[in-house]
Amino acid sequence: MKLFSETPKTDTLAVLLGLTFIVLGWLSFVLAASSVFLFIFVICGLAVTLILAAFICGKLLIRAPLDLKVALVVTFAFASLVGYFSEPTFFSGRDQGSIAEAAFRLAQNGQLTFNTPVSGSFFKIYGAGTALNFPGFAYTKAGDLITQFPLGYTAWLSSFIVLFGLHGPAIGNALLLFLFLFSFYNLLRLFVHQYYAFCGLALAIFSFLPMWFSKFTLSENLSVFLLTFLVWNLILFWRSGEWLFY
Image 1 (tube, helix red, strand yellow):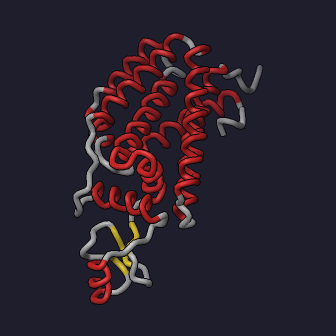
Image 2 (tube, one colour):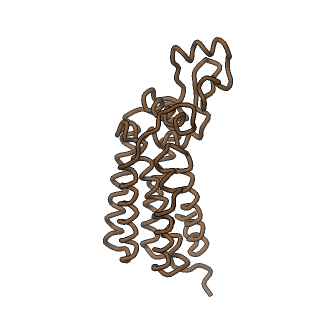
Image 3 (cartoon, helix red, strand yellow):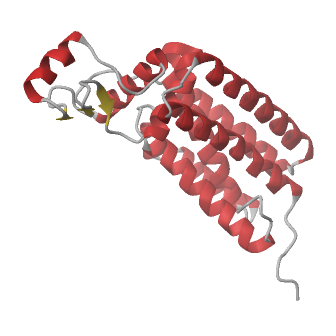
């Protein structure tokens, strides 16, 4: 009896598609945390990622079974449609507004910290710590503002803002929605027939929460993809033992 079962090459290609964007996320995170979020580094990372993703998608459209091809096209089309009708959120006082501002400031300044004449005036009053007049931000000892939200998602959005400007948040979220839905379908098809997997995908597509979150700059957009991708890869690793999935 074999300890591991053979994994189809299409599973490997599908996983590689997700991994290319996870590498981009790590690159953005490291650049942001190191305060070297420079245009040339971000653009090069995006260019390489998009080229690799296009190549892998082409391979999937050639080699994958029909159901996986349909799922790839449907999830990409749906995510693109949601992204097209999404509007960036900039209003302050709410999580999505604070995250959006932090992402734009990072794209503009190349670092997470920033200051304004108004923030400098309030810093003289309150000092370091939570910035009461700037929800979602805190004051550093030097008097600069820095986001209190997860840096990974902030850096992810900033990568697309650098290239697409005001449309960056919508494109970044649409891509995360596509990656989540495609990973979700691949996870389902490990356990059930493709027809039932499509029913599960349809349920996810027409559910309220995925569409609602993808229209706002909230870190749940990144979290749901990472969690689904993690579960899918853990099961593939348990079944095949291939280190790529680990």
